[in-house]
Image (cartoon, rainbow, N blue to C red; front, side, top):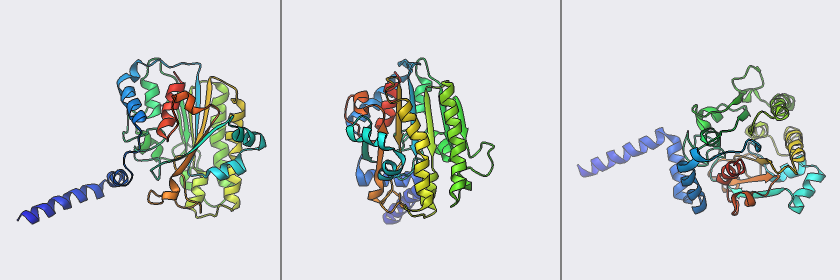
Length: 311
């Protein structure tokens, strides 16, 4: 009888985890790798949850967070940065850091660049900004539906938002992409047009831009040497290069280029069992170590750098 009860309990627990797949994967990662937060990150998170409504933000500050889904740092440098920006990277005038990220996607509300750790509402960067004293205006453009439903949750406040999966631009949302680079280019032309227009109006203080055209190439099993991928990386200069040069010496503007996850060297895999795929990176026009007053560790520090810089 005791054995049956124990087996029944084990079955019930496994059933719960299998039904809630994200709960299973999250727990497996914790068991395998331990806590992904440093003591400094934990302390900051505790302070923010207690004090963020009292923190006053500076409406003269601006941050651009550009996330290019699943791209490789080496290819970013090779195809996206021109000689001028490559030189600034080598001399340290542009900050860069590669780090491990123990996740395979920025989704399901945990371990992502906007939320940092498992929560769906109060601790993503948009809601930190919205809930602070003297909240600033925010802007977002992306073409991946789970960004709103799973990562940010429907309770996130964004002042101006373009979810291109729902936006009336038929045929070029994330689900419509294929192996033709022209379709990817047309989507990027449209989304970067929205971003550039918002930059010119200067109506916002925090800008979030997510592009997953390069990630789409990986899902289509295209080689890293394919014209689709090379042309995609070259196109990214229109976004990254423009902003890094526009604001390279601006003390009130922070530009952060990052990816929500890495991938392994063949360019295809980025699941959490592939240790080589954990590598992610950040490039910025300011030294992020100086902003957070300690060494930059991982994607949680992206949130902290943004929130601290805006104060």
